[in-house]
Image (cartoon, rainbow, N blue to C red):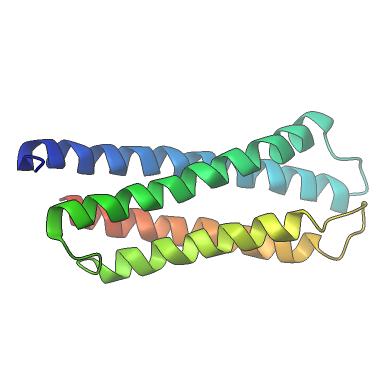
Length: 143
Protein backbone atom coordinates (compact mmCIF):
# COMPACT_ATOMS: atom_id res chain seq x y z
CA UNK A 1 0.00 0.00 0.00
CA UNK A 2 1.33 3.42 -0.95
CA UNK A 3 1.05 6.10 1.73
CA UNK A 4 -1.25 9.09 1.17
CA UNK A 5 1.79 11.36 1.42
CA UNK A 6 3.53 9.65 -1.50
CA UNK A 7 0.28 9.54 -3.48
CA UNK A 8 -0.11 13.30 -3.12
CA UNK A 9 3.39 13.79 -4.57
CA UNK A 10 2.54 11.40 -7.40
CA UNK A 11 -0.64 13.37 -8.15
CA UNK A 12 1.34 16.60 -8.41
CA UNK A 13 3.95 14.83 -10.54
CA UNK A 14 1.20 13.61 -12.87
CA UNK A 15 -0.13 17.15 -13.16
CA UNK A 16 3.29 18.69 -13.83
CA UNK A 17 4.12 15.99 -16.37
CA UNK A 18 0.91 16.59 -18.28
CA UNK A 19 1.35 20.37 -18.18
CA UNK A 20 4.75 19.81 -19.80
CA UNK A 21 3.16 17.52 -22.39
CA UNK A 22 0.51 20.18 -23.09
CA UNK A 23 3.24 22.75 -23.69
CA UNK A 24 4.96 20.32 -26.05
CA UNK A 25 1.68 19.85 -27.93
CA UNK A 26 1.25 23.60 -28.23
CA UNK A 27 4.81 23.79 -29.59
CA UNK A 28 3.86 21.03 -32.06
CA UNK A 29 0.77 23.01 -33.02
CA UNK A 30 2.82 26.16 -33.52
CA UNK A 31 5.23 24.27 -35.80
CA UNK A 32 2.33 22.78 -37.76
CA UNK A 33 0.61 26.15 -38.10
CA UNK A 34 3.89 27.73 -39.27
CA UNK A 35 4.23 25.05 -41.95
CA UNK A 36 0.58 25.47 -42.99
CA UNK A 37 0.79 29.26 -43.17
CA UNK A 38 3.91 29.09 -45.35
CA UNK A 39 2.36 26.53 -47.69
CA UNK A 40 -0.88 28.48 -48.00
CA UNK A 41 1.15 31.63 -48.71
CA UNK A 42 2.79 29.95 -51.68
CA UNK A 43 6.17 29.64 -49.99
CA UNK A 44 7.93 26.35 -49.36
CA UNK A 45 7.60 25.12 -45.80
CA UNK A 46 10.55 25.72 -43.52
CA UNK A 47 12.63 22.56 -43.60
CA UNK A 48 13.60 22.96 -39.94
CA UNK A 49 9.99 23.43 -38.78
CA UNK A 50 8.77 20.56 -40.95
CA UNK A 51 11.49 18.20 -39.77
CA UNK A 52 10.84 19.02 -36.11
CA UNK A 53 7.08 18.64 -36.57
CA UNK A 54 7.40 15.26 -38.29
CA UNK A 55 10.06 13.84 -35.97
CA UNK A 56 8.75 15.25 -32.70
CA UNK A 57 5.04 14.38 -33.08
CA UNK A 58 5.07 10.62 -32.50
CA UNK A 59 7.21 10.94 -29.36
CA UNK A 60 4.99 13.60 -27.82
CA UNK A 61 1.93 11.52 -28.70
CA UNK A 62 3.30 8.46 -26.92
CA UNK A 63 4.26 10.57 -23.90
CA UNK A 64 0.71 11.99 -23.74
CA UNK A 65 -0.89 8.55 -23.81
CA UNK A 66 1.53 7.36 -21.12
CA UNK A 67 0.44 10.34 -19.01
CA UNK A 68 -3.18 9.23 -19.38
CA UNK A 69 -2.33 5.69 -18.25
CA UNK A 70 -0.32 7.02 -15.31
CA UNK A 71 -3.34 9.06 -14.21
CA UNK A 72 -5.66 6.08 -14.48
CA UNK A 73 -3.26 3.96 -12.42
CA UNK A 74 -2.97 6.69 -9.77
CA UNK A 75 -6.75 6.95 -9.45
CA UNK A 76 -7.07 3.17 -9.21
CA UNK A 77 -4.45 3.01 -6.46
CA UNK A 78 -5.82 5.99 -4.54
CA UNK A 79 -9.60 5.80 -5.01
CA UNK A 80 -10.05 2.20 -6.24
CA UNK A 81 -12.51 3.54 -8.83
CA UNK A 82 -11.39 4.67 -12.26
CA UNK A 83 -14.60 6.73 -12.61
CA UNK A 84 -13.87 8.90 -9.55
CA UNK A 85 -13.27 11.87 -11.87
CA UNK A 86 -15.45 10.98 -14.87
CA UNK A 87 -15.18 14.24 -16.83
CA UNK A 88 -11.38 14.34 -16.49
CA UNK A 89 -11.21 10.70 -17.60
CA UNK A 90 -13.56 11.24 -20.55
CA UNK A 91 -11.65 14.29 -21.82
CA UNK A 92 -8.34 12.44 -21.38
CA UNK A 93 -9.61 9.43 -23.32
CA UNK A 94 -10.95 11.74 -26.03
CA UNK A 95 -7.56 13.43 -26.30
CA UNK A 96 -5.86 10.03 -26.61
CA UNK A 97 -8.36 9.00 -29.30
CA UNK A 98 -7.81 12.24 -31.24
CA UNK A 99 -4.04 11.80 -30.95
CA UNK A 100 -4.35 8.37 -32.54
CA UNK A 101 -6.60 9.80 -35.27
CA UNK A 102 -4.13 12.62 -35.92
CA UNK A 103 -1.25 10.17 -36.18
CA UNK A 104 -3.22 7.98 -38.56
CA UNK A 105 -4.16 10.96 -40.73
CA UNK A 106 -0.56 12.22 -40.75
CA UNK A 107 0.60 8.94 -42.27
CA UNK A 108 -1.79 9.54 -45.19
CA UNK A 109 -0.44 13.00 -46.00
CA UNK A 110 1.47 12.72 -49.26
CA UNK A 111 2.62 15.69 -51.30
CA UNK A 112 2.11 19.42 -50.99
CA UNK A 113 -1.60 19.46 -51.84
CA UNK A 114 -2.75 16.40 -49.93
CA UNK A 115 -6.44 16.55 -48.98
CA UNK A 116 -5.52 15.03 -45.59
CA UNK A 117 -3.79 18.22 -44.42
CA UNK A 118 -7.05 19.96 -43.45
CA UNK A 119 -8.41 17.05 -41.37
CA UNK A 120 -5.01 16.81 -39.65
CA UNK A 121 -5.20 20.53 -38.87
CA UNK A 122 -8.77 20.28 -37.52
CA UNK A 123 -7.94 17.30 -35.31
CA UNK A 124 -4.82 19.10 -34.07
CA UNK A 125 -6.80 22.20 -33.10
CA UNK A 126 -9.31 19.92 -31.35
CA UNK A 127 -6.51 18.26 -29.37
CA UNK A 128 -5.18 21.64 -28.25
CA UNK A 129 -8.66 22.82 -27.25
CA UNK A 130 -9.31 19.64 -25.29
CA UNK A 131 -5.92 19.94 -23.60
CA UNK A 132 -6.90 23.35 -22.23
CA UNK A 133 -10.11 21.87 -20.82
CA UNK A 134 -8.21 18.88 -19.42
CA UNK A 135 -5.67 21.11 -17.68
CA UNK A 136 -8.43 23.17 -16.06
CA UNK A 137 -10.22 20.02 -14.90
CA UNK A 138 -6.99 18.56 -13.56
CA UNK A 139 -6.12 21.71 -11.64
CA UNK A 140 -9.62 21.62 -10.15
CA UNK A 141 -8.94 18.09 -8.91
CA UNK A 142 -5.55 18.98 -7.44
CA UNK A 143 -6.68 22.12 -5.63
